[in-house]
Length: 247
Image (cartoon, rainbow, N blue to C red; front, side, top):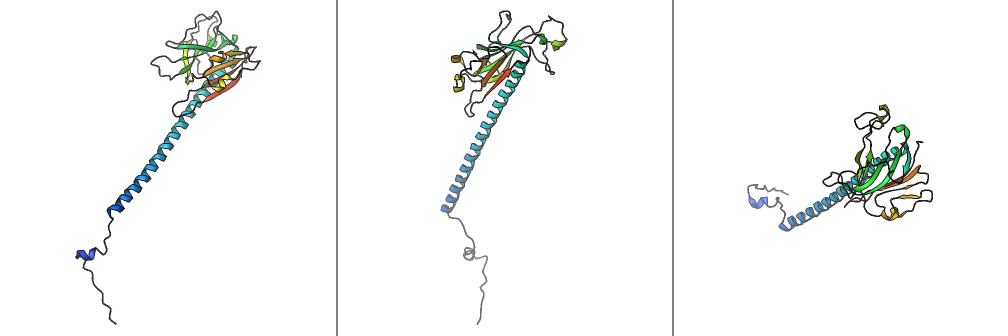
């Protein structure tokens, strides 16, 4: 039996068609559609992931800002002699921050005698000034002396008040403690103070993003702060019970 082989002429176009396959137009269209769907799903998932990550970052930043503001406020309350419910009559030089409007005074701290401060330190809620870098709808201001790196108060010229003569002037400044404080009445804002925290600042109906309950002896205070939610991140809140330690 004889077997013969047939040599394929590679220069013959009819022979090449036996080994060269191609995609039809329909196959190409199907592949393009599938590729488009895959890219679309991938893009949608990536966009959702980026949005979730952005929301998480905003919420984490908001929480951190509230915690830092509360820590600062807590330290100053502890160093105070008393938490008062209003500005003393002799604190006539208190001036709100330039451009700040719709002020609500929340905390008035009576300094300890050892601090050499003769005027109270005031925390108040207000609208941010126009053309300000601080975001609204509300901001928390502090009116008081600046602090040095060692934690002591400064006289305004960078000198530790512990080193100045009694009666020497100490300059007070308005500074923003934290911004984007809520201007909405929230459910927690309707919580009544216990009988031992009879002083509600401000009144119950006016509570928004920053308020406090002060004990009858004016030695302890409960503080609440609420950040305004933005378009993507949920609101953040924080609260604490603080007791003065100075006599």
